[in-house]
Each structure stands twice: as structure tokens, then as C-alpha cells.
Length: 188
Image (tube, rainbow, N blue to C red; front, side, top):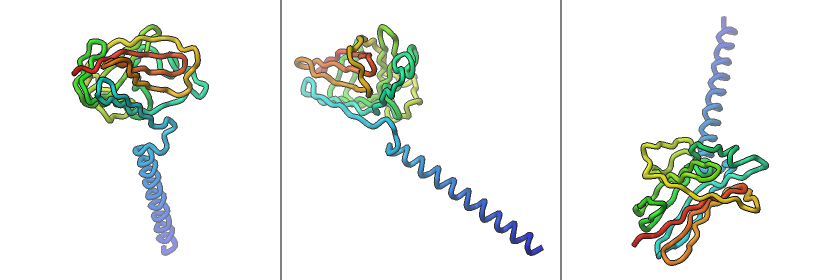
């Protein structure tokens, strides 16, 4: 009887230890994910001053790694987080006019719907969400982006904020051999 009790106690201790180690492994993995230390797509930032107002974009920059991207990994006709890991965030000190949208100063998330001949840019009022948690009910608005083919492939997804002249600029998204862009104006 005593041997049987000892066996039960040992089994209980082993099961308890396995459960504790499992919980610790999950918590450790979750904290690495939360703070970005294990992402294969590194964080990136682009900023520009246009019309005297600072505009910045924070995003995660995935790479091709030999994969078909536009129309493949990033399918046509579906909402894409415009990067990886977490929703891409644009912050503007000034009011922007972009493709008919009148965007007040503040922070927003950027989403896109890629297609072969044109992309749709989505400005969403929610920020900080995981890249799969798009909520269309929080959309500020949508507008079309021009698309052109690049002569040289871009290995790592890149966002550019180009300061054109005066209070005008261009937002450009580049990956593989595709560039989607839209002009904007900083409104005083």
C-alpha cells in the first residue's frame, strides 16, 4: 500500500512539474512575441517633414525569401496589413488630404487591398492591433493607389514618404516588382 501511495505521489509531482514547465514555456514565448524579439520581419520606421509637419510610419518589414509576393503571399482582392506582425501605423502632425480623404492630425492604421492594376488604401481609426485583426467598422475611409512595375525587385517590403514640393508628398509601398503609391497634401 505504501509503495502504491509513493507511486501516486511521484506521478503527481512529475505531472505538476511538466505542467509548470509548459506554462513557463508558453509565457516565455508569448513575452518574446509581444515585445518583437523573435519576429522574422523586423520593425521599420520611415518619417518625413512635409509642409512643416512631421509624418511617420511604423511597420514590420517582411522579406521575399524566394517567395511569390504580390498575387501570391499577398493575394489579390483581400485586405492585407501592409507589412507583418502588427498593423502598420501612420502618425501625422498635420491634416492630410489623400485621394479625396481629409485625414485629421493623429494616428491611424494602414491596410491595403492589392489588385493587379490598382490597390485600395484603407485608413483605419484603430491602431495597435495584430495583423490579422482588421475591423472594417473602424475604417476612416478608402481611396485608390496607383500601381507601377519596378525594373529591379525589392527584397524587403519598404514604405517611403517622399517630400515632393511645398506641402505635397507621396506615400509609396514597394515589394517584389510592385510599387503602389498615392500623392498627399498637408493642409494648413
